[in-house]
Length: 147
Image 1 (cartoon, rainbow, N blue to C red):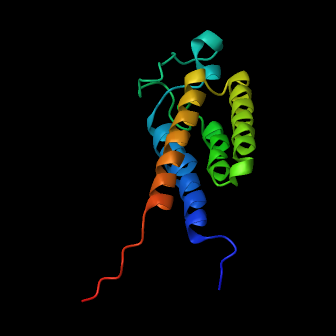
Image 2 (image 1 turned 30 degrees about the vertical axis):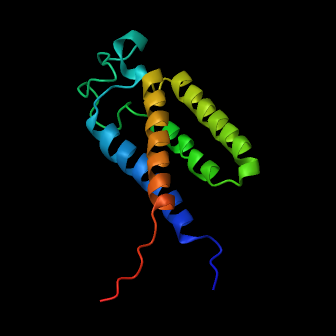
């Protein structure tokens, strides 16, 4: 019986979503990178000192600024775009790019993230999606070993 959605496609889509926004961004970076959000720093009327993106220290205790979870989730749209038929792929990438850009701007405008927070969220997701795509769709089944 033929599957409606091939297993590799499901593995790729679920894997990139779970590993990117799920584990890497929300499970590791946001919980261990204590950079405060723009609305919380002195320069924007908050009560915490500004911290550069490369410094994991800072006054944020929970759900911190680096990197943006919303932008990582928006950038995940590049994963299904990679699976679009060739004649639709450019449009799919354009749509994912515009969506990610708009979400990035809205998060910065709301004071939730600095530019580097959204930039690195998009970059990390793009790299992760590319690597997982290579792993999932480039591996070859091993021939059965006859013992």
